[in-house]
Image (cartoon, rainbow, N blue to C red; front, side, top):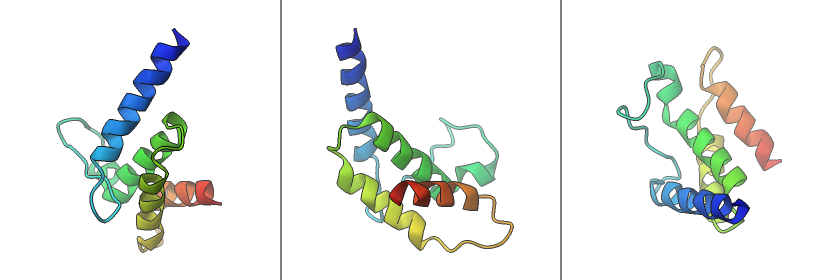
Length: 95
């Protein structure tokens, strides 16, 4: 059963990596998510997708993970910006 779970996680990671945009971000799909708009910002979605790749992958999607981190690193953070927490969380992963 553990092999089945591992295979499912790798398949999900492959799908997620295939959805990444050229700039390193992941788009949000309003049909899949119903959270408030602040949580659907591309830096938030990108942070969550990159974190999922880190947890689910076996290192095969390192370049997608790095592009996601680079996208978040380039996102300007402003005081009071609700997406800042997600971006900083992903930046901690980079360290």
